[in-house]
Image (cartoon, rainbow, N blue to C red):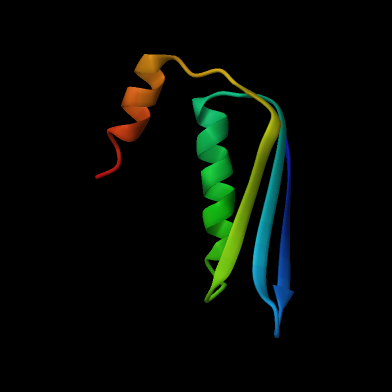
Length: 73
């Protein structure tokens, strides 16, 4: 999985975080994407996030997805 992340901070137009991924994405890769988004947005008071996954192929098994979502309320 390849990804690029860009944080655009504007005083008058707001803050934006753009993340673009390419290639196969598995559960650890998806967790990595979420971690990067959290890290990038943490210092911002308010922002919009765009995650572009069009060039990605997800490789999740149903059991992987169930285990992943058990962590959330």
